[in-house]
Length: 87
Image (cartoon, rainbow, N blue to C red; front, side, top):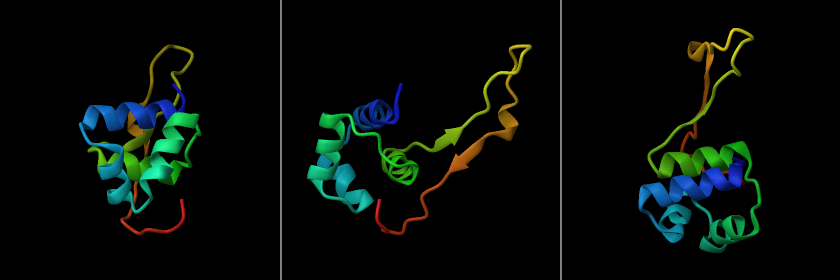
């Protein structure tokens, strides 16, 4: 799954409209709808904003080791701090 597909999935799962999410992340509705329609992969900070608006966190988890196990404790959470800088 790429970032654009993930963005679509979390918006749909949240039950919010693209308009609602756009308003919450400080972007235009056309930005959100065109990103989804064109399959544009958003920047990590933009995806983190969308995730937060939809009740999710953007988390990076290491790939499984050779033995098939993953150390999830070394995962990284990408947080959106609430500022409305460019995305």
